[in-house]
Length: 228
Image (cartoon, rainbow, N blue to C red):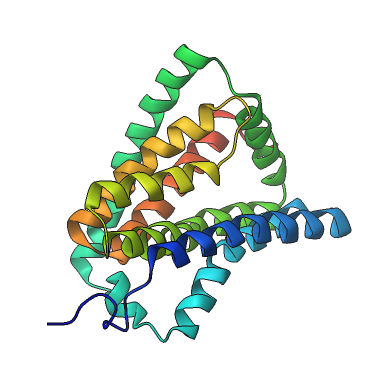
């Protein structure tokens, strides 16, 4: 029987946490630099999502981890359908959580500004394509980093609850909001996504659920505030 240290797919939790910290600053710096130099928010958003997965991916490649098995990245019909159904469920849950957070903490200025930027961005075909791409990449890259990489790593040594809490906190902090509203709702969504991943160990289901949730939320936003 292999111990965690002997298992080539074992990722020390401390390594994973350090990679996540590097990812946080790496993503902010590069995204901000791109937006500053090009004044192109759409490019910054798309590249920002991709960058979230770059340091973890580089680490996993360096360690020669079998990512398909480690993440549970299997393209099975049941996981694809599960992801689509869960995405709709996440939308309903997200609406409920946002309503509760607004009642308790008030409207988030950061979220309002982000929504305004998305609406403005979506007024051109290029901007709308970038917004859609960002939603899809959020599912692919954020689930890769927070569930597939971080949660898996911590679960390799500690309990499922510990892995769930730490990965959800990290996920929430990447969705920073000075008023704390977006952080709180992101933490709650992180717990749900983390539970789904812990229950079925399917990166495919998680990535599709997350992407579907973001796409549905974008569609609702644009339906409420139609593109001119």
